[in-house]
Length: 353
Image (cartoon, one colour):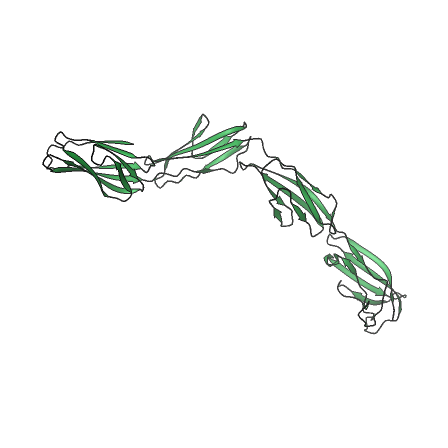
């Protein structure tokens, strides 16, 4: 930036005048020049107020270069000395204003989509204009809606100017390729509560991934391994995000079969020796049953024992608390598994005393 200040000093014993100017904070130097009067012997520049300004060169010449590192108010004084060392002064009140901060965001830049670029620029003095440039196109708008129809490399620039004329530019360079494609399959196809490990094979195009296993567990691994603890139908979702934030997602359903393994012994001996003293259901995953009941009847169909708790077992006593006689008894169990499937089984057990 170049400033020209003309001094018309008729008498050096008369003080000069003051001038107010406003500039924008910049990384480049500010230049100030004067045209001295014919009787000038030499000049001297000095900042008499303000912190953050430095005269880089030309302090005793007609042209100076100044570096401002802070915003704020400054007073730059020029003293013009005559042959008898009398001097006159010119003071410039300089206000250094902050530049606006240009910035913008988007939710993802995808080919064939209309992308909204949101202007998030900041200015303490308010924005006067926002100019977007994409290739050869120049668009005057606060926010920008733009549709990319071709693959290739793009440079987006946002130039903002505040109400004081200060400017800033933000740019984004990116490469736009075809849309990402999310795809996967899993192995094995038959998953059970006995074999709950599933390996997911990713067939997607490149990018970052998020797996949702529909059981409150997630993964960002490219090809994760997951264990499904409970039977049921799971909708597995894979979301793929490419380098430009463009997304694609796909879902596959996975059914985990409830594989029940349970049995009841054919005999027991309630003699108190700690071995085979009671009778009840044993097996794998039986604690996942929603409902359970077991009844014991004698050969005449009379109920000898009945429970609704899978952890309760028959100790050989009847409902009255007296010991049941040795012999063969009929058991009936009714089960509702975790998927709601109802199971009924009937068998015999021998009580040996």
